[in-house]
Image (cartoon, rainbow, N blue to C red; front, side, top):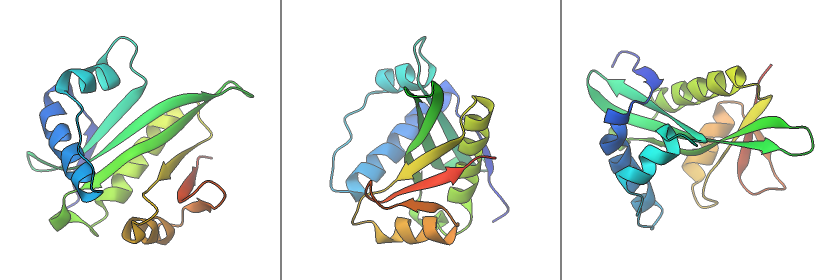
Length: 151
């Protein structure tokens, strides 16, 4: 597979993103209940505090990252968290997650952040190993979270 294209999601991508959210939730033994309307508000609404990125192989969405923005009250600097990152199973270990993280990092940089975080379920050793292999700094006192430095 050639490198996938990673772009900021469009509203028309939301049904595909919703399917990926459902798959990720099922992987963790949970059920996703988010509606398309809620996703629209999260990522595209007038008070949106999120951004979504999609990885495509041709016209097929094969992965996504959902990024949420907060603010560090003590410094008033934006903080970003990759709240969801999911790549379809048969496309994993091909650099797609890394490309999605890079897109999130670029977005956070443009918004004035000094870094962003990504977490994973404590039982998801595969994701933890992937983040370590990418060289992400583990934040050990906050559970399995990883810091992505922006310089």
